[in-house]
Amino acid sequence: MSAEATERDLVISRVIKAPRQTVWEAWADPRSLEQWWLPAPAKCRVDRLDLVPGGAFKTRMSEDGGDFGPHMDGCFLAVDEAERLIFTTALTEGWRPAENPFITARITLADHPEGTTYEALVMHKSVADRERHLELGFEDGWGTVIGQLAELVEA
Image (cartoon, rainbow, N blue to C red; front, side, top):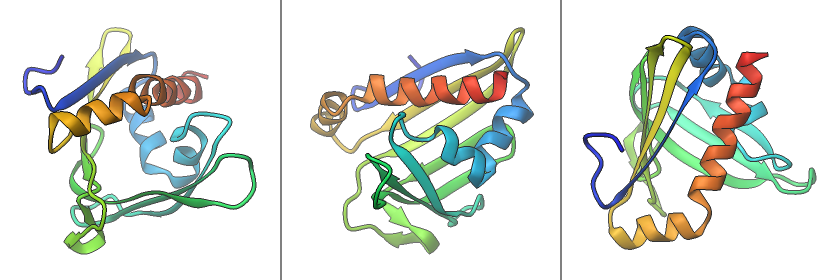
């Protein structure tokens, strides 16, 4: 667990056998992000991906390949190319308060002898929200998407 994690947080990490810049580019390119951001067979559509503080992070999802519905409507808090992304659902684009805040996530990328260490620290406002996220399938969902990211960039 990350040294900064508390009882309100969830952490997941993996070594991805690809250079850090390649992993970053899979995050930074909307077409690449659509390929791995949701656990298959769900489909992702990136509506906005503005990788600047205050920029929009808005995705939509389709469970069955049909109509797309809401998925993520958040805001980037920090963007350090090829090192770190911090985003939240507590705010939307331009620092506007969100209707349904749930998480703030910090994604870090670090060099590893085999490629890149990818870590997601997902912070919640309460232990109850953390537990709800676990019940919703955090480990399987976030683990699956990191696996899909690895598959994409290791190819």
